[in-house]
Image (tube, rainbow, N blue to C red):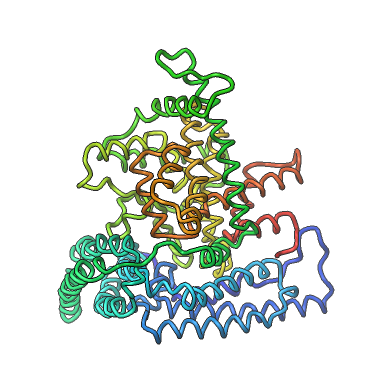
Length: 603
């Protein structure tokens, strides 16, 4: 087992390595006096960054473990009024210090990091004081409770006895977290869907204990083992009490509105995306893309249905009904090929091997050696998304990335399972693997962890990550993956329709007051989603906000960046070199990548 440096040393080393001043590409070095001024500004920013990282990790110990800072593995976030105020006061102090630095005198890399840090500080203050999710969203506490155990036990960042001791301390504190949750939540503000979802997930905490802790408890002895056993017993009792409160008090009395409304939504959208696009511009671009992609899908349908017996008509100038029927008929050919109810994970493993081989053979992007595993999604994290990529934190090196897939629930009927499997047919499994693993999130996360700015690694942009993952779906199809299979192209475009629909759906639900029927029509009719997939996304749209648009906005900015660089380089454009350079910046919001690559001002 490898020897770990203390997290404090990792933070100091990484920060020291990213603060050097570089002249922008195509410019000459600045005179000595200017360099000295810039170095002073960069040094001040390095100090603010270091103190933010240290203080933020202390105030968010569960997230710190996930990020790879293991100084606080025996602690859980304090969600009491005093704990929340401590985060606000800390953020205000650091924001004032950051605003006192002349950004124009920072290196270009630090200009980007300063904007990212300012956004995070403002977001933390806004979340506590304005959004107040601690008062109405029980998912906040569920995520902390599950993450407290999962983050210390899922990866081998330290010897098992050490991690068991940390898990013991955290299990002792989870009842306190539950008490804070009950004190903080106002049932009148809690949406019913949030309460119901968390009530279904709470038992997953004990599944984590049974999976990760109980089988390894024998590695502790004496007082340590006795303390662990007591913590497990107390946690089982606390979970039972919490479940009774959820079922008997919170769920029956949850009367809140899950819709954010325009004002809160626009504020959250701006901070979540850090994009130049407004809500109205996102809607306009998404609706335009929806129309264009449906037209392209009809062209493929004409190709695959030609001369096929019993196929619907595919005229050159179709009505909306003719277009709909033709695309649906073509998709039926893809739906017929799907894994068994128990075979989704094995299909994803096979797809991962195939996508990796293809990326290497086509020399599309540098492939890291970091390990990746396909796993069943832990129960406490199910109910929001079908799959996700769980990369190790930027301070943990060489650990596994998990491509997690949610199994089909045992209580689903055969009809419901068949609907799910038609959506996640064999070709869609390949696209899901491209998006979540290779060359999508897994590869992007591995590159991001190599960037020398710890701050940028910790504040990795969801817009960049999701935009890159969707971009790779298109890129792999254009590169000839699946031997140019037109049905694969059709399913890829359908997957892209999901990205487009996500952006429309999110603001439709949270701003425009869409009903379930309106949402389902968009997904099942306009985007050709199966009922089970659409029903799950309807739940997700209620449980989350300003996250679903990251896919569409991110990929639009990725497409725009590639077009701009291709236009600049012309015949000198090299696809692998371009991809490697895009990924080399450590996953900041995409607009900064474009500005850095084109030598534009950082704004």
